[in-house]
Image (cartoon, rainbow, N blue to C red; front, side):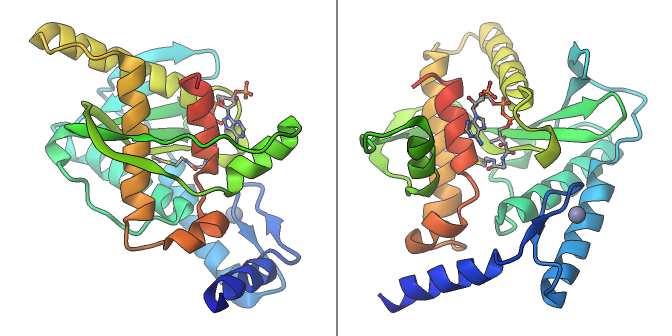
Amino acid sequence: DKDGTQTIIDAGQKHFGAVACSVCGMLYSAANPEDESQHLLFHNQFISAIKYVGWKKERILSEFPDGKIILVLPDDPKYALKKVEEIREMVDNDLGFQQVESKCPSQTKTFLFITNDKKVAGCLIAEHIQEGFRVIEEPGPEGTEGEKVMFERQRAWCCSTTPEPAICGISRIWVMNTMRRQGIASRMLDCLRCVWQKRKEKTDFNLVPRSLTLFCVFFLLQRNNFIYGSYLSKDEIAFSDPTPDGKLFATQYFGT
Ligand code: ACO
Ligand code: ZN
């Protein structure tokens, strides 16, 4: 159709002669002034957002040779919440999310991965929710590993319409471009599961298999943000959806 064709052409032009910034990771064409000024805007926002000066009181959940994971909760001091807000805005820009307010800010848990040189290299925002929708897996075509990855990157999401009980929703998961594939997202998710588990033990909640719960909800939020969100139409997803990374990661993490 006409719109579909337009999308392909636009995408083609956008990536013609594009370079990825080695700092913020944004793909842009240096030859295009509009692209370049857009890059500059994001670049500055990125630099400011990832700067972490260190706080008097931190809730350290885990320490590693390459950094640490801290947790920020809604009742924390203003400066901590301001930082989290700044990071969330930058991540939303990076993901192409429209600014969406958290459904229930008093229930939000933010996990940050801080590198030894005091940069925020990863961010995971989780919320309490009631239910999730399972992704319907359609078998992809046969082929090499590379072909399968290409296919996964391009296909749209498909969810069941039957809600399943869930308690934890991941509304954002993001790792700085230059630090990906070092297990940072996995480690943040491990921490999240650990925190949720402790809470459940204390309050004696019904236990749902954790892997199942997280899996459903991960995709629920994908669906809210992308397919039913006002930003991207279904047709656009194949081209502009930045979350195939997220799916490849989740598929691996949850072992499906
Ligand atoms: N392609 C293929 N497999 C992947 C990819 C990928 N892009 N990313 C992760 N995996 C798989 C791999 O098997 C990986 O293990 P390996 O490196 O040993 O092969 C495994 O998942 C674990 O990956 P991590 O290193 O823990 O993941 P990482 O720290 O790189 O972060 C993330 C993954 C968050 C998806 C990152 O790529 C990112 O920030 N992408 C851009 C933002 C984005 O799309 N986020 C998801 C949005 S959806 C949402 O927020 C609800
Ligand atoms: Zn840049």
